[in-house]
Length: 234
Ligand SMILES: [Zn+2]
Image (cartoon, rainbow, N blue to C red; front, side):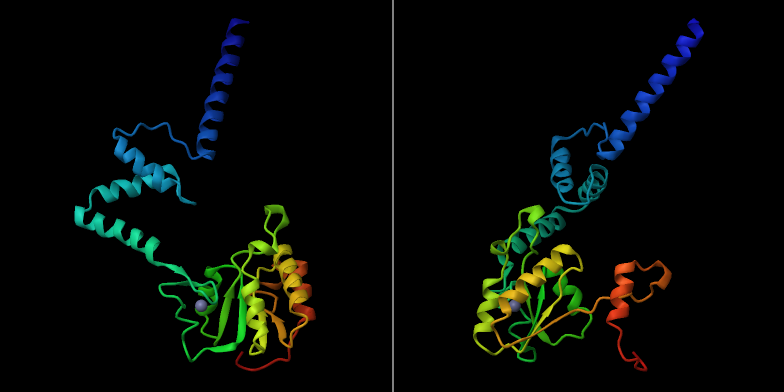
């Protein structure tokens, strides 16, 4: 009976140890002791960034420790300058070093065609395609009642002001293909109804490289509805 109790206790101890290890892993917490409060503080700062856990932060901090003082100064100075000098373009909301971003002030871009996006990263993604020659308008988010984000929180009024000029011919909705994106599209569409402007949105369909059998029903259905005339070399 005693032997049975001992085995049972060992099993419980093992289970508790495993549970502790698993919880530590889940919250990316390591009970390691850092023998320097300065390193500890640097690790804390770095790991406050999304996607960087304590272990990764420590590895990066120890790398930095091996760099020369001038290198570290250049490193930190670049962040300070970035914070002080980068601003939002007063026209489109894209990031910029000047009042207007490089896209808005480029005379080769067509201001009558505005592509509406959620985030500055969307501008970068679309620019990398080299297909678009119009300008952008960054909303700074999308309508999401679940997250408490409403139209008043977004950069919408300046977009409508651009339509007031009568110079805009096309608005392209390039928002996320989800419920929040669709809600925002609908809201903007209603707001733009009084203006004489063509409203288009990015086509939605099967991604390049996707095998048809693995595409979800919604995407596949939309691809079928939005089918296009077949063109060679496309
Ligand atoms: Zn701009």
